[in-house]
Amino acid sequence: MYILLLSTVLAACSGPVSSWRSKTAPLVEALGNHDAPELFPQEYRSLLETFEHGEALYHVREDDKGADQYYQLAFQKAELLQAEVSRAKKKRDVEAQRRLDELAAKAAEEQLLRVAVEEEIRLRAQSLPRSTDVVRSGQKKSKETQPPLPSSYTVRRGETLPQISARTEIYNDSTLWPIIYRANRDQIRDPKRLWPGQVFVIPRNFSRDEAVEARRYSNKNN
Image (cartoon, rainbow, N blue to C red; front, side, top):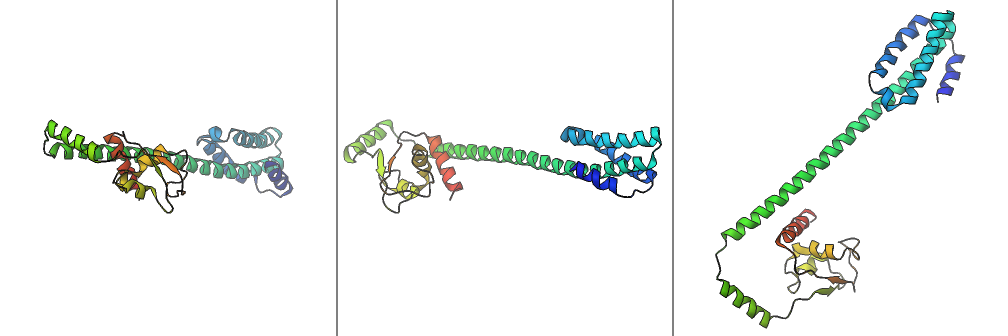
């Protein structure tokens, strides 16, 4: 690109040396003070070499016409480099803002999870106390009268994960479907698309925190 510019400029008629030099020198200095050497070291070095060549012709050889050609080329290089620096800075600022947004979103998600857990604890604390013997008796009776809960499930045509999760023998709660999804990721590529005949593992010993997180994820992806 610079070679093409050089051939174009050298073939053109030039204006007064003082005019091109007075326009080019401040632009070269400004680029040097505004990240151009760090962002585009090779291009900035090429610009300096062009400008310094013009300076040598102007001050040493007193070749006004030759110097003017190099000043004009340096000016065009500087304008191109200035545009590149501007684009690079804008891209850097956008990337920095994206990282900040990601951190903010993660912090907000963690805060929502903490609030959900605290609400779960508060609701449990407000519930009426139950006798240990009554609880154990109820659990024993439940085990005697109810068949064991299945540890796997075969998908039927048209079923979705929330529908499976809502089945009485599964979780009786459609919002707990993420637990099934996470346990069977090796065969579920898209949680919204299931295939008849797939056999899913049904986790049973998940924690309260996992249930709270599953409901939060389900509500978020409805």
